[in-house]
Image (cartoon, rainbow, N blue to C red):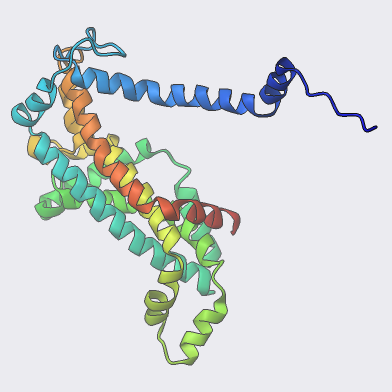
Length: 294
């Protein structure tokens, strides 16, 4: 007669589940609380009708849209919002195009100065952004005296500054992805009579779409959130970005305008989430492939 294996007690099954899967749920719960706490606090502050920092709580005691209405009617938030989106979209598009062309050259061609050029791009990233403020201020003071269209308080001038700082690291990221594309595809296209430009735009760019999406997303987010250079570059109230404009609201009256500040940060998160949602299918493959190839 065969013996049946006794079932473990509920206490032993619970202990086994905790050892096998329970700690993962605990870590996930801690991470969720850590990530959601500031978001819930900002949402609560945006809905707080008093609009002050001292009266804000994690769970709102009353709900009102007064902060949002005051932000849209009593400030230049609409102009700041349009400036941020315009500069971020233009910077992302230009950075993707210029970085892709630079990565194509460094990946596919061998020429004198290629290696020093690559290391030079990497070396530029080692200096903190704050060191460039003085140089940018002096350079654009001179440029603004002769060409006011690209000087201080212009979106074109600020876009040029952002382009100069974003090309190096993105060129390195894209070069790693370009290296994973077989060279035989280039050679096959050129045997059929394609020029280098046709090979780049019609053969390679469709194959490296994931890294283009990743770079575009990262540049868009960093540009929307950038404050340091924009605060030095933009002085006209109508030319400010959202980050600079919102900081001006709480710089001197942090407690009084905290509700409007919170409402503005929530509105600023909308385009970032929309771009992230649209490009999220490319993010994992774009980051991992570009990271493992040098």
